[in-house]
Image (tube, rainbow, N blue to C red; front, side, top):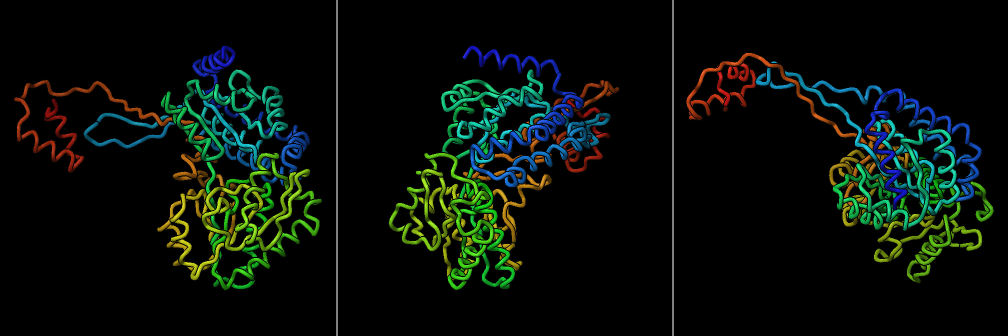
Length: 480
């Protein structure tokens, strides 16, 4: 505890000194982080493979490349983001000026998740640096190789008086949560998110919670055969090619009309075979389950006889290799854990409907998802999804793509999260927008007037109705 308090005090003192507020410091740290990613690329490949069995291509696409893109974007825009923005004032305030000044929140704590242990540690760090904050990163203990790498590499490249890494499991996290922070950023499960929010309430600490949620994909039967094939390919690649389904944005279930189910299953099977080959257990292009605990959790979902009876493809498991085959299920019981909890793995249920329009009611009957993916060319259906459902995001005719867009906020709503980040939204997450108003000593009438009366009330009503009268009212001395 004493060492943690000393660490916090060092970071707070550095923040109070103003060292992190200059654009020079912010850009220097962003460049150093860029250098870390490029110079340590091979080591990053090694630790991500050790933790999750990720192929080098997947590691660069989903982690290193994403971060390099974000760094470039932030370096280009950070000076503009941190500049005060002029604001217009009512004429009644004349002569006065106003602006909004972005102010760093201070000392922030970042909890990252194990499924993208590098990206989910450093993406929010980019925002914290851009905002001018000092930061403590707590990597996930479930990705120990990456956690250890960050603990070694961050001090080597970054300003150690402003950015620190603390490793450990639940006891360390609990200790961190007992202390006061100026912001807590958490990526993980809904259950732990509740714990984070409860602990933050003690100090009224603002939080950003990037949680999970069951993300549906809606596939319209009115698509052409080529469009259906493309939809299946995109769903398959995003579901199993992105950490083998261990992603908050992965498709948790597909909604489709009964008449299309068989065709869609065949297309998904073809895509799996094309992407990963015949012998999936030996494939190096698909990640493994992170650890035995999560492996057993996923296996328990399949042990339900009602669920296992719905398997139409895959289902094989290898405990020694922590591998679960991409598995497709048709109409599993809606009351099963498979359909009521976030899957976070390679199991993909398909739920059939009489009409695709029923998908809106189905989605609304469940907690608000992090993302909704809709494959359709029907503009009426698109409008209904946008206006009648609530989710962190909606993507039409693709999966995951919005995550890579710096101009779009990434975050959830309701049980899928609080707050957002990426690009300018990351900067905003760690920033307080301070209102600044400047007036001058300006001659005003000093005449004495009677107390408030109906005459003055009429003028004040006019002042609010027609702002230009404000200047006249000031000169008339109708202030008190």
